[in-house]
Amino acid sequence: MILRAVAAFLLVLVVIPLGMGKALITGESGRLSFVGGYFASLFIFEILQLVFHVTMGSLRLMTLLWCLICGAIAFFGFWRYRKKGKGNKPRATVIYMSRAEWILLTLAVAMIVLQILNTVLNTYYGNWDDETYCSNAVTAWYTDTICRYSPHSGMKLGLFYNTRYVVAGWPIYSAMLAVLSGIHPAIVYRTILPVFEIPAAYVISGSLLDHFFFHDRKKTLLGLIYFQIFALLAFEKIGGNTNEWWLIVNCWTGKALAFNIMTPLVLLLLFLLEDEQQGKKAVWRTLMAVSGACCLIAGSLFTTIPILLFVWGGCYVLRTKRWEDIGRVLLCMAPTTACALFTILY
Image (cartoon, rainbow, N blue to C red; front, side, top):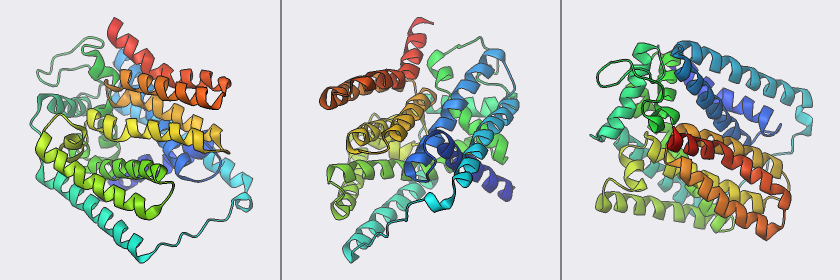
């Protein structure tokens, strides 16, 4: 079971994102390629889970179909990368760090590890909203359907009985991981995913700080440590309606991911569009994949992401005078805008 679980998580969280990134984002390796590949896999998952919800299809069949589609794209990406040859790959730059930078990095990583341990082993969030999300994952796993049975009564439900909960089907992703790994979806949802979600949130925050401090590693690492301290203070003093609380107590929920990972990531990609002189196509493709994946994460992103893209994307177009990018901004806005309209009108 351990070997099966490790293989499943490596496949879903590493192999498929790497391959899909090489196929859809850029043929070269790199963080941008990996990020784009992972969120492209989430976007495909969102489309499939909606189709199987409407048709009352099997969760396990959907999992197989998702693996086949994403696996085929990933295989093509690896094949294309291998065909282009490793000789075209630029030589990696060796990064030297000072003793002070190593100390700051060690401290930041230690704080992340301690937070993971605290969240996984020492917190419980007794909230109806969170319990419903978790029980949606468990119900999907037991009934082999996608949001077609009530997690409270077990009765069969109609199409889009609760539109925001069904369209933003992030808990179903945990059910899919449970099918592949053999681990109960509640454990996947609340115990395993935080091990990846908390570091991801801080890596994105650190990348934003790196942008603000003009790639000064010492200032970036020090800023990240201050951010971690401020998050702990806000969590302790403000309570359960802030992204700091959600990051520390229930980071697995859609609203926690929305404001600790997805929104900062979209903002970071918009900044990269203005910084990058080369490779803008890869940034745009990554932004499109991330914006599409937002439909899966949380209903709050249905309005947050279009507004963010409209404001920052509009400012980007006005500053750079790249009028041809208006269509790209609108394309990135399209998935979440469509979800927002469907949620309002259905």
